[in-house]
Length: 316
Ligand SMILES: NC(=O)c1ccc[n+]([C@@H]2O[C@H](COP(=O)([O-])OP(=O)(O)OC[C@H]3O[C@@H](n4cnc5c(N)ncnc54)[C@H](OP(=O)(O)O)[C@@H]3O)[C@@H](O)[C@H]2O)c1
Image (cartoon, rainbow, N blue to C red; front, side, top):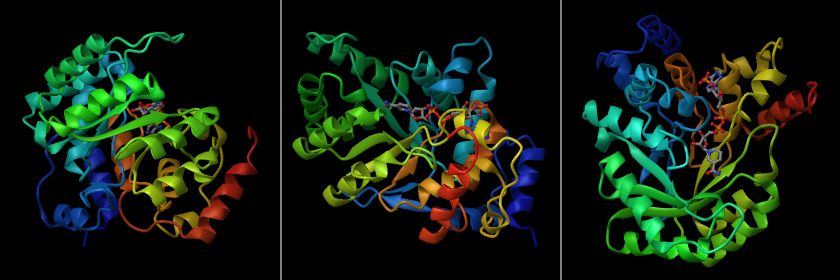
């Protein structure tokens, strides 16, 4: 009998580029996918998705975007659904929208995009510019309603939030929210969570960056707000820190066979986490990341051990 590990290895050997055969194992995999419900509706999302800044963005701006097509296909073939993007991620939204449309898979993606036209140094937010930016997102993504639109980095909330609230009321956006990835701005995020009727937040959280677990994530749980988790690898920071280290045996015992799975399963085990969206430009890394959405998650004792392990490494 093929194990999940055999299946993943075979997929890598095949390049994970073609549509995977819908055999028994595939069905077996899907049945074991870890998902979390969006608190406001109960709609379930796979616990791992895909982000599109960083390397994804770099490739999206290049002349050869074929790797991104394979990344998106690998996400979908392995039960993933959530794709986080933003108008400010260069060509990511436009390129991904086109690739997914070409593959005829637009409806299979849970599209999470953002809005932000606030001037960098502050100042008046132009309502017409915000509406025009949203109109471009509808055009690039090709889905109406868009699943989720968040006000990027809490910018110009007083102006931009009512615009997406109105679009939600008119049925053109299914869920709304706001994002931030600076600890110093968590108090503003918490204020927004209490003030606006939002469905989602996007926030940074990782095994070596745990501040969100102190009050943002508990508040999300209390208020019934779904969470997209950003920067789960600290970009390249966590991979640099574990360079040369072996994955501990106690982690391997729950099927953790890569550092990416170690980092993602740590985050996934937090009860307030709805979906983690690591970015990648490589199909084999997408497959690795999706692997974290299957099998066991660490319990609280193992999570503590994971924190201690990472904290003891140089570069803290
Ligand atoms: N304020 C906001 O709204 C906000 C802020 C930050 C992030 N975000 C969202 O969250 C997403 C994730 O954050 P992020 O992109 O900043 O950082 P991240 O996901 O922590 O790290 C991305 C980096 O990890 C590498 N990587 C991915 N999978 C890997 C694997 N299995 N093994 C080894 N390396 C791997 C990628 O390179 P390869 O291409 O080589 O795989 C890339 O360099 C963003 O893309 C964006 O969608 C939102």
